[in-house]
Image 1 (cartoon, rainbow over the protein chains, first blue to last red):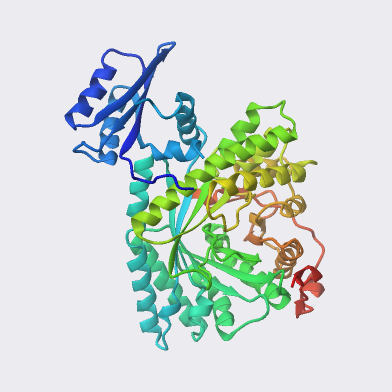
Image 2: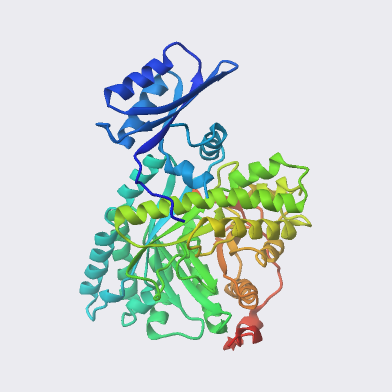
Length: 97
Length: 455
């Protein structure tokens, strides 16, 4: 029961939606703009459905996690994409003992 | 650096939240009002108002921030306080109503959706304050919006105070009568307990026990939909496998409560009390405890086998949940409210689920006869007898049981009542036509059972 809480500033970004040109360019562009460092990207397309999972570090960033989340979610919606930005602890707590 | 989580794990979490209604049902801040006593009602009102607002002022905004940070909905932010009959024992019943209104104003000011603790603990008898508070309940609940009330009428250690049981039958009925135009909503905010826990985050029965610290954060999780989906996915699983699947799922659900509790505690600088691992259903389709039982292989919840299915579910949820949290507390069992669970409502409508079966089900799970609409012509004595039966189950089985029934004034069995929101709506259920009047009027106390002698 000694999992670190809020010590890291890493978040998981998930992007789901119909495949289209420029999804990664859009996300990474916005992240660069706010100095959010990308640690890892994993992306697949299953029968036209785009799924991307990204691990990012907000330590160097000049935006808060919640604000980043709101922005990407809103802008994603316009493009028909479901974007979620969540602190990594939610996954750590659920899946790691 | 590689992704530290498997793609499947991340997708599973998202699916649980977005498709299976996983959420945090409530963050409840318990606040002690023991230092707010006064001889003067005006002064007392001011002190409790100020204390609630001072402690819970940022509860809602912190809850929203945490919800956004982790991407999981936190449905309710609530406050519970020291039982008012204890902290304001010198007040009369009109003054008790004023206290309820002061708390109601405080709840409105801080933006919480319920405040619990308009409560009395009378398992062995009444103090002057207990009598005044109980007398004030119908008016207090019908003239406020956010107040929840509870009265503990029995414990395993003390037996059952049948004078209080008789009184509460009348109080429940009066609550419904005073709010008859709103389908008796005041009765939906009143719980009659046996073995009431002091750290329960769930309403309407939440209060801040006298053994609790100055201020504390308790968390209640939800997640019947997640369990229902898992059970549905494995129709071939035998009972050992089924129990394991539920345990694993309950672990994950309860971990969310632990995470949010720790985060809220840190952000508010208030100690973290407990996670209540109860699977709390909502009226939303797919967020139903009844559906879990049906997915186990019952045609309708309430048919033969339902009690066994619920026993397995409740035990597996506890086993999985207990490992997920440092401190599990509150009610911590599967809830089986009728109006708040679409599957239960359906089961009642088709005649599969009766009041007697619900009573049997409460022997193996928390928490009691919950959110059940009774015919409007039900007598106070019959309500008392229903309370007595439920309290007896709690007393003998050393568990919490409760009764939250709503007499539907002017309606009969089969008619529908609507409470709205999380409280849902339900068909009015049938009751036995035979009288219990002489029994509940005997007065006195049912002695504590032999199992209470544990020392």
